[in-house]
Length: 387
Image 1 (cartoon, rainbow, N blue to C red):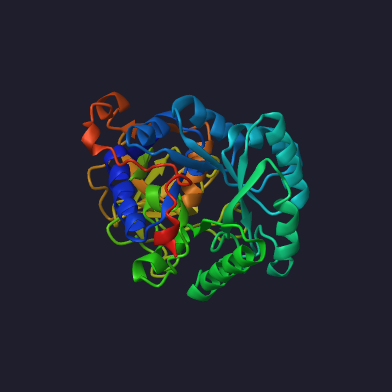
Image 2 (cartoon, rainbow, N blue to C red):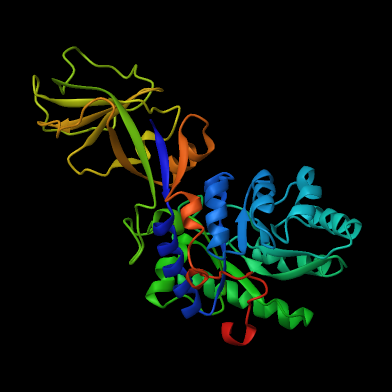
């Protein structure tokens, strides 16, 4: 059986470590759940752990969270398009925005619902993703502040999410200055700067991130422990919360180098590029019943360091086991760590089972004193400590 396992104790560990980092920085934070693709048991586990601020980039996932987690603060993390505005206004407490036309329609929908919709205005700082250009800030805010059912709670930015721009202190200092400029000009407080993501955590741990950056949107570091900037794992975090267990369908001793001439006709790139393999060299190979149709094979790393992925087709992956099969036989499983891309493909796909461990029924027996209490981000802003 092929399955993705989510270790709830490991998840709790990573949440606790990151919560401590947030408290040391006097910051609020939102758990980004989009990589879960609405997986119910993991969402219930987050609820049991006391997570009450969750963000997602798919409205269908926000609907799933709303059914599972009572009384949570919902963040819509993809800039709204006009066709989704009605659902955004209805489902999300907070959304990220960069287009005045969309915000005006959000205002109309919020008025119809008799509610105030909170927004973060996204500013372009170099990653070339969403965000208004700094030169248009004041004119943009003049229009937004006129909308009665829109509450601007702050400004934000995305870095390290598209173009690979490494976040730096100068960018965040600049973001802090933009807030000061807007507050002075319009005489309105903007309590939140939502500039933090998993890619910003190294700056936080170095102690160089400005205190004004007081809200984080964290996903990858929680589930995978990844140090996005430097590679490897962030200090204290676990990288084995999410694992893929793939069943062995065949295991045999075979040649490790093709006997005939090779071309680029294969639809998927081979991943084992060992240059020291010699013609005629043999070893044990296992075929597992997971392929490119199931996940991003390049994002898998065997837990056993002796194992290497040789390549994959749409349906199977070949793993070089070494000169000894290590007792593995058909029906056994090989475990893999996953990167973000591999996890995303696995969670959204329908071919591989997803399970939490221990079972949720056992996890429910956790004492209330073990809850982490990740409170709603907007309610926990403390302006005095964040400046």
